Image (cartoon, rainbow, N blue to C red; front, side):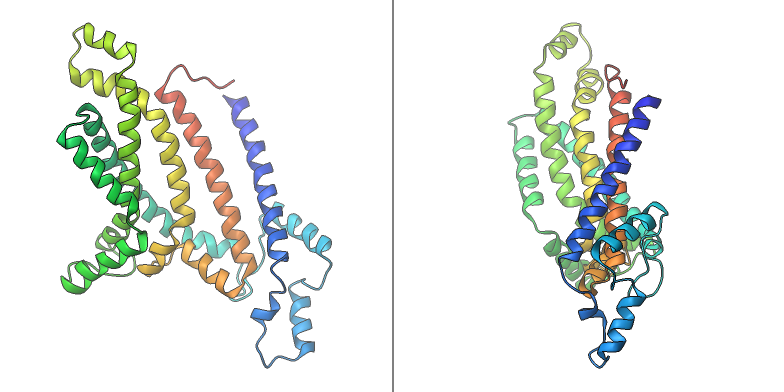
Length: 305
């Protein structure tokens, strides 16, 4: 296990460096950031002085070497707009996004997992057909539309819930449901599919032939074997939400790191953009590692050399 962790750590470092290189090159091809940052009334000499202050007057290869040196030191640059360290700005917003995503994923798992099991053990019944129909609606509904409709109904018309921020538990209800609806539908369909496959396996028929209670057969034997693909998808969805909850954060005025990255993208604040992508890349690597380790807990046959 220790050897496996070391190998994955090295792979993570290489992946982050590769992502950083691609992002650096990609941003270089978008043009000169001073065109957006410099005020219209600033003289050419002042613009050049500003470019020099940020090190943008150097050749690309010199900028890249300096960028990688700072990256290895944990310094992802200074925000063009605020003048603060870009990584600090992202990490300050990180807990807000993390809390929202955790609540959303808990809701998705709490509803999606048992609904998928119910649909599988009652395959082709009215329960199964109803749940499948609801899952199609959940997958098809756009996130921005769900958020706007929730605000219109529960905040504007009924006045039950606040429409912006995350200062109390009530603030989490609408944005968390907005993010979780698609995941509930996705988990429902996936668990149903994997459970149907497992329930047709020989070891399930053997367990039933032994006289085991149906509840034990379904939840102890079938569900446990169906959880591995579910955990894989759940891990990917967690990472995707951490890096892609920008629409929800914008609609509900949540001060998360996705909203900060969107604002940085509009203003061409490259250090903040780079910091966001680097943090996201590291997060995906950590999530994938945790998912791999969970495999061994669920299925004792999984071993890491």
